[in-house]
Structure formats: C-alpha cells, structure tokens
Image (cartoon, rainbow, N blue to C red; front, side, top):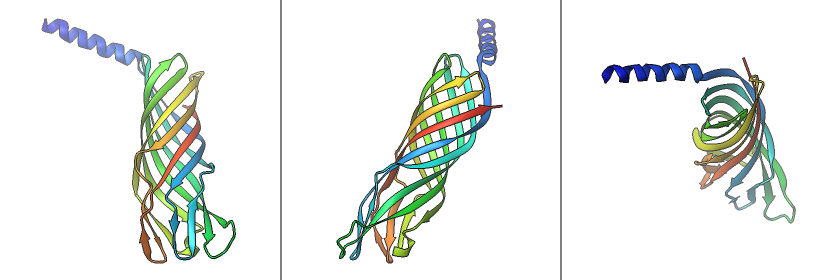
Length: 206
C-alpha cells in the first residue's frame, strides 16, 4: 500500500510539472481613479475632493503560472495617481479653484482564478506602499497624513494572445483608507481618503 501511495504521489508531481506553465514578462498600462474623501472645512476655506475620473499610469513585471484550468498572476507595479480638490474661500461667492494632488506608489496585486481557453477571470488581494506625494494644497498649509501601506482587492478578466501578450481589465477597490488625518494651519483634523480604480494593462512575456 505504501509503495502504491508513493508511486501515486510521484505520478501526480510529474503530471503537475508537465502541465504547469510559468511565464514572466513586462507590464504597463493606464489606470482611471475615482477618489472619495471627507470634506474638510476651516475658518476660511472648504476642501472638497472631486469625484471626477483622473488618469494615471503603471508599469512593472508580471509572473503568470498556469496549471490545468487555473492561473496565479502576481505583479509588481510602479503606479501614479492624481486627484483634484476644489478649494472654496468661504467669505467669497465663487466656485473656488481646483488644485491637484499626485501620488507615486508600489502595488503588489495577486490574481487567482480560472482559465477558459485563452480567457481568464480572477480575483485577489493587492498591497500598496506609498512612495511619494506632491500637492498644490501646500500653500494653504494642507498636509495629509498618509498611511505607509494600504490593502485592497482586484477583480479582473483577461485574455492571452498567442502565448506572448496578456491583456487585462481590472477593477480595484480598497479595504483600508489612504490617509488617517490631515493637518491644516497646524491643526489636525479627521480625514478619510479612499480610491477605486479601473485598470487596463498589456503584458509582454519573454
């Protein structure tokens, strides 16, 4: 019985090695971000994050492991995002001015799912590390307290073309907020900033 078990395990491992396919390549694309944030008000100004879509870019490496009708696809991507904030002076009857904030971050998404011929559908976690930020709101003494690391999820569908290209469309939501607070004119205020994205990527395998 033991011998049969060992032989069965060896046969299974050989079958896994024969069926599994590992590919590595480069990936790039665009991401359309939508921000939701708490409105912040001081004695003189009101800061409101616009919900309009803003476009960013990403690039990095992709690893795809195909096994029978399943796949695992981890990626390491350098991404950029922007958000627009309307600044309204409270004692003026004006529409306010639009100021831009930009973010550079490192994303670690991992999709797991099923294959249907050349098509793929998957879901998985994404970890994000904030690398740098730039804001036109500094002139108002506005400083957001960003979290160093955040977590979210991705849902996506893709298609592999000639075993050379991987085209993916993904939606990214968040499980944690980007910032824990904001400082305006040396005063700390509560602030909840979250982003969701639609991501279009093209990967080229080596």
